[in-house]
Image 1 (cartoon, rainbow over the protein chains, first blue to last red):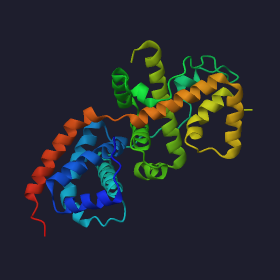
Image 2: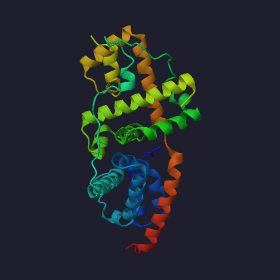
Image 3: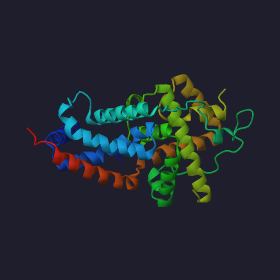
Image 4: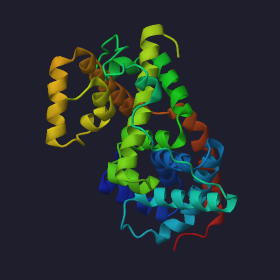
Length: 206
Length: 82
């Protein structure tokens, strides 16, 4: 869970980081690593993303003195991560594959007839209270597993927008995608998670 | 006239308030007559709420501890603050 930091708390944290206070770093690492990982995963596989995020924090120890506060701390950190990932890709001569095709997930598209009506409609209405769903530990494990299997672009979009509650224009900036591409990424990812929860609710299996 | 498949295609945009009033009106009209799509939309909304409450804390703890160690080393190497 990404901690919501007020401007005041953030200013205090930045002072701590500038003073090279270890406890400030511990706090910042816990607050900002999840979002930084989401950004890095957009470009890199999990292991490489972890490397980059670790290296970034080491850089921050000295670079924080150059941080001018024109953007928020989080945005600044995410930019460092994105730049490092791009450099790493450039040196590795790798291309970032992005998939922005149809908005409809193929597994879901199969469930309509030729006229566009439901052939295999959703069978159960779930509780809209996420709390009730989240209390199910097995469902949470299943969610972790499926999030890990999402294409990196979709996973990052979903984590930044949904779990970390970033605004769409921020997510577009961080990931370097257009607003319409972000809409497709989000919708595709949500449909995959929807299908996963549906299977879980109906069969108890992940 | 909006079909079920069209509704599913724009469902996230609808939930996130990204549709214009004309598109919203056609979604509402469709929902008024289609129970399946009401169920689908309710379940997709539950999915987004589920994501909001979700965090991958456990997987992250090990990484955070490694970062703590490397930051501590870097702090020890860095000069004293001015």
